Image (cartoon, rainbow, N blue to C red; front, side, top):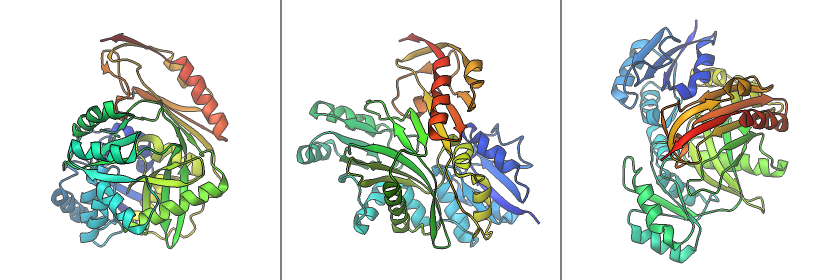
Length: 401
């Protein structure tokens, strides 16, 4: 008999992962999303238009379907998933761990207590506190809401005293559930994102990357390459840091998307952890290709209570996740070279998130990206070369404001 997995969240950004879930032979998926016209609706036999942040409604449907597991595709529904898994005794987070994973302030305080290496920080609510931190610690610093709702909203690098007010006001615009912000020392180094999985006392790096970020105040990544260019000893440190960070938050088992910075001396600084897989195509096809497994299948099996002791990763293959963007604010008028980009050898997909006629802007946050390129190949270099070639084919015409 097939296991029943409830999936919370079904946006277009997760289209490839949803298609993989829809094709699983041993799992029947019940998908919930707040959009009545979600792309999941025609994919799955069981789809419900539901506010996925409403835990009581989610629980009612979970009991109705007698589910074996529940998984949240994004942060918005993480609390609901934790309520259901706790109530029905399923694998998943308890509400306290979910709260700690969603509130960066709580997360960082827990890590501080546990002695985990992270940038020096302070939780603030007033601009005067930001000024005091900068006077004490110097520049540059990073300011961001403890809960922004995802997408890197509200992150701002303050480079000197003239930008303190601008950075504080900018971050304040993206406060989600409370008025707290983090201000922290900016760590010079290479940023990395890690898909982390723990099971039965063992932990795995399903995929790990390094990022390129233009020197903008928002520090939004435009290129992410797998596997990251780190020494084996550094990768081991990254794995240890992920395990310590997850354990401290009460996530001894399950999945996490971890962000860290590796400085020139190979010290690994933890920045944040999401108690779910990475967003967009990171989950699938990227992590699946890089690790050589179907990551959605692993997620389904784990959360439905299956024994996955045979899970292994023998080697890493290459992937590149590139993002297109506008260098100026205005109206997108034309995009050319799309078919040539899509036909580039090694390129798995090219997507446009902004269409002609849409307003575009500089990279204030990840939501300002205009599209993406995903390249999958045997090695990191061949995947990156394919993505670069496809990127050169694309031309965007913008009528600047």
